[in-house]
Length: 406
Image 1 (tube, one colour):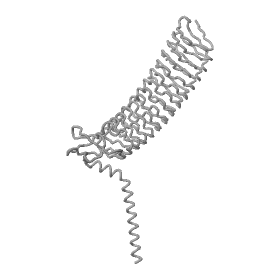
Image 2 (image 1 turned 45 degrees about the vertical axis):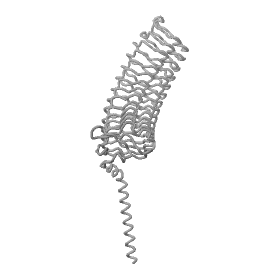
Image 3 (image 1 turned 90 degrees about the vertical axis):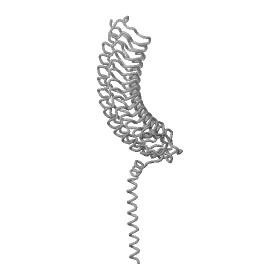
Image 4 (image 1 turned 30 degrees about the vertical axis):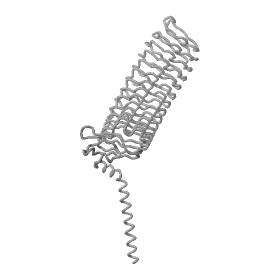
């Protein structure tokens, strides 16, 4: 009797162990099982929590949802509408916008298009996998998905639309695959948890405000093929300490690196011809900058209030220094103005209190209003006759001395 009882107990124990192993195996394969069943099942539109619309061929798109405040949505690969079976290939525009309760979404491999604003402001959505067939991520598709910590973009994607991930403040990392050739305006604006990103070969331009306010971004790799850095592209990336601008870049847009307060040095490559308005303004840690020959103009406020910038050489070929270009650069001790320059605009060096001497060549015939105002330690030498130079009001106000050589 005791022996029989022991056998029964052992059998129960073994059975329990096998059951535990089976459960564990089931848990590991749970997502695969779910996706497999969704990918093979045909869902009837009349009973689904989702709304569908035929696209005129054998495909259909998701157009909405019926259930109030859904938390999890599984999009099927096939749907039966009025007795006919359609392949689900698209998620329509703004379909799940403001669905604040949504925490998870399964998108089947059949889907090739995610519409504009499809998941905008789904603030509880934590992660999502975009299927392989998708080639573009639409305008503001995941904008303000504030809980989204990770996203997998497949290799087939070639375009990331304007504002696609704007305001995804919990997104810590993202891999942009090879094959992406276009990253839109404000695509990652306000991704304040993003620490690093690599832009793939094939991308030729970084657009307007693409990474603005990515406050934890410390490094970024820009490929050789990039030719332009757009307006405000990296502005207010306050943790960005260094960046290598590749040789192919020919233009640096307005405010491109404005208020990058950790940026300590930068090299402007030879192909760049102009440094635009406020491009490096208020980069308060910027100590060193190398401007190659070929740059012909420095725009308004380009280096405004770069308070640690101590010296700079203006290259040959430069024709104008814009209004307030170096205003408030309180540590600037020396600057070289090349022959050939004709204009020094209004307030260009105003408030450069550490600047001690400067020689202005004969070619300069216009010195704007307040150009050197409050440069209290500055001795100015102008290699020209006074009557040959148009000098604006307060151009040398509070300077130590001004001397004409001819």
